[in-house]
Amino acid sequence: MSLLEVSRLEAFYGASQALFGVDLALGQGELVALMGRNGMGKTTTVRAITRMLRTTRGAIRFDGRDIAGLPSFRAARLGIGLAPEGRRCFAGLTVAENLLASARPGPWSVETATALFPRLGERMGQTAATLSGGEQQMLAIARALMTNPRLLILDEATEGLAPVVRQEIWAAIARLKQGGQSILVIDKAFSELRAVADRCVILARGQSVWTGTPADLSREIETEFLGV
Ligand code: ATP
Image 1: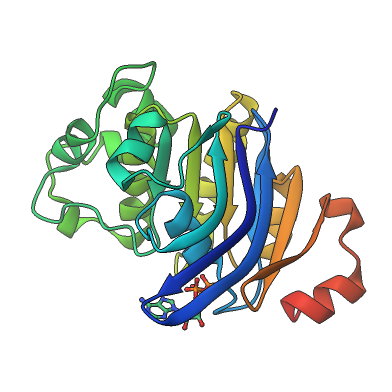
Image 2: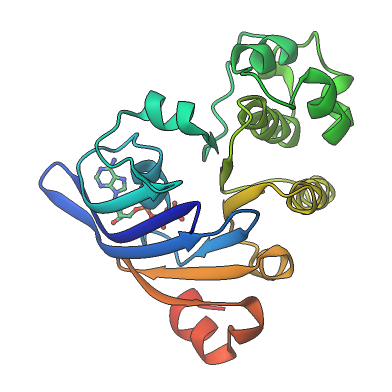
């Protein structure tokens, strides 16, 4: 059984329909890359799964349970942790406070989070507002991990970051995967995504149009759906 199973998902912003049928499955311990050009529905899919967007149709099953009717805090409590696009750390709180604010029982702690991102350990007393973009992204991921999620979702994991920092984040993602963490990741760095993903799901115009392993992702598919 998949940990996450999304089928025929549709989503609406008011009267405007953004998703027209997304199918996506993610097994325990799997890393799935959600890909597609800008505006194709990746973030909307994440908002639907996390229930931040509740005007949806179709099934969203998490650990066998239909979560499509739940509010976002319930989805979070069931174990869906999100590092959102744009990071959204609490700017006025310190790194330590940001981490502790999302802490829930489980193996992740301030110590394990800072072992994954040592730079955060050096910045514990600084407010999030004073961090670099890369450090804020590390904090956003660490904060999601502090909820001890069964599924970690990273929306635009490395967008807008310097190459060195991006490498650090990809290395951390690879380590999380090795540790058995289930992960759904969105990013524009397709080659890095392909290197770390077990499977890719491509969206086009609000629909899933292709699913397969990175090895199966042909040049033709890339050209047609990703514009590579
Ligand atoms: P990007 O990579 O640019 O973030 P995306 O694949 O994540 O793109 P979405 O942000 O999910 O795409 O957008 C899917 C569609 O939904 C687009 O047509 C977009 O214009 C529309 N959309 C997104 N957010 C809203 C909103 N708050 N209100 C109305 N329409 C929206």
